[in-house]
Amino acid sequence: MSGKNGLPKYLFRMGDTFYARVAIPKQLRGFFSGKDIILRSLKTGDPKIAESRKDIEVGRIKAEFERLFNLDPFAAAVSVATVRWQMDSEGKQATLTTTEDTTSTIGALGIAARTEADPERRAAVEARQRAMLETSRAGMSGWQTELLSRSGRFAPLPIDVADPAAIRSWIRSANNLLEFLEGGGDATGSTPLHEMAAFVSGGELGEVAKAQVLQEIPAALLPRRARPYLAQARSGAVPDDDNITLGDLITRFFADDKRACMDPLTQRNYAIPVAIMKEVLGETTPVRVIRRDDVRKVQQVIRYLPAKARENPRYREMTWEQIADAAKADRESGINVPALKSSTRNTYIRHMGTIFAYALDEGKVEFNPALGLTVRLPEDRDEECKEPFTPEDLRAMFPRTYRLEGLNWVPLIMLYHGMRPTEAAQLDTADVILVDGVWAFDLTTETKGAVGSDRWGDKSLKNDRSTVRRIPIHQRLLDLGFLDYLQSRIAAGERKVFDVKGYSQAGYFESIRHEFTTWLDAVGVKRSNTTPHSLRHTWATASFRVVDDALRKIIGGWSVGKGVDVATYLHTNHLSMADMKAELDKVTFDVLTADEDPGRAHPGLIAWKRVRRGRRKATEQQSLKTKRLIASKRMV
Image (cartoon, rainbow, N blue to C red; front, side, top):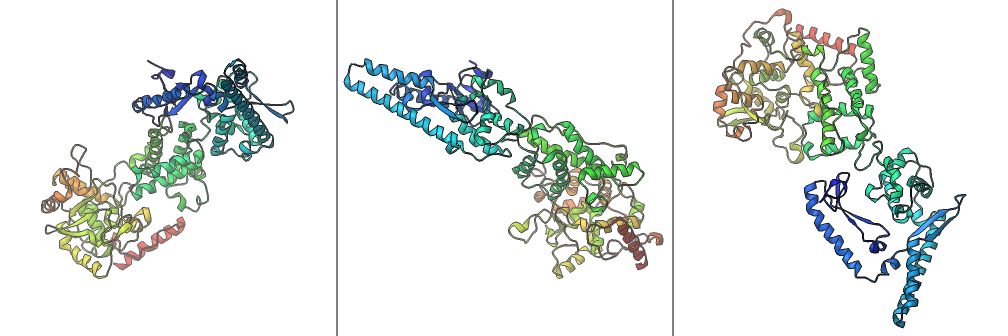
């Protein structure tokens, strides 16, 4: 059997919550301040759970009805006196009178007293009549005094700027007192609740405050005379517990348990899109009013954003929107303004979509306005596929005179093990371990030897499933003396394998990125589709045909697929390090054998003292780069 709103009998849904809804028998309504319906929250939005809880709650309500039925029939009338307040024509004088129901009850008591033959019962009825009259008079007198003086329950602080919490508080009090919610009469001439609220609060309310007041009244509790205002009761522009602001959404998103172990680099990549969203959409904007056209404005800011915008003095004092507009105008006028990489740009846009997807999952929005907004431009084709280095490139990068010291070991480790730049740069000396007689790199996010919270947060990996791994050290590096270099670092009391500096979420590679790209440029292998990451692609290409595919994926830190979970079937602790090393040693490169080309001689990453990472003017950067290249050529 279906009840209201097509739901099972006694079940009612309001917003995301189900309620037990039971009609109050007419003779018992005096016990419930004249209300005709009881709503009890079932504290769930799941219809199956609500159905199971409904019967229990309805049983409790009906048991309460049964108890009240057995009381004195006049007890309800004596227990509560309802009042009606009216203002005079000038709005200065208020009078409070008993309702018709109260008057009828008092009259009925008088008739019962006159017709009662038993003296003791007649005396008891008369006592109840007098008690009810005194209760009504006292209540009316007290409420009239409080109303006129705006004291007691009628004295909340004036609300100049509507505050949802304050409005909720005094509206609930008003709902309990005012005859407005008792029903009866038609809508003609009735006073809107927000006007009453303005009178009670002593201040004028704006449109948002009016909507907040109306939104506080559950539809099921509105009497017939209030129904004309129900159409105004839902406003997407009003923040409340269900319609949270964008700022609240972002706070909840990062506080969610799913993001408790978010990679620091990923957190860093969220910072810029979040800042742009707050600026363009408004941090206090309720999420339900944000539409796709609004999100497209954010997309367009990201679309035209220049690379490293905050490091450019031209844009440093601008807002994100102003930066995007200025960069777009500069490009249209012929100025070469480097754009964000396509992968970075679309990562920002996808992160925005992820935040709204979270809002959708939490029931805070009805659709994801940022779904499918990634941008594909014609110039992106130059970035689509990062090329590996050619054999000629490798011979130019690693000639016979390449110095095997310090930071110069970093690119060799990346080349022979397929490591990502961040993975190689952040290695600790404790990450080089001996496993079953085989020297290996133990790649984790843990700082070994540290205690407590210091064990975590210093290093980062792409993800926790496939990138945590052990890689045997290639025999070529052992033959070149890598362990001797490692021992020198340990003897010097250094914790890191390399002399690098960590830049918070940016990681350790950031401190040598400039030197790395300058080295690639100096030896003539830097192109639009070659980066430090190309060393990983070079290993992937060379290992494709000679290394077992599953082991190759594990060594490189790629996912082995959903069907075969590396954490279950190919866990690194269960693999033979000797077998993995045998496979890894099959990958060879012709390096450190060719004579150096005098035209592009360069000693590698150790060419000069590294410069602090920070903002530099574009002219200073170019001048510094030129000086260093000249100095490096003189050193050979």
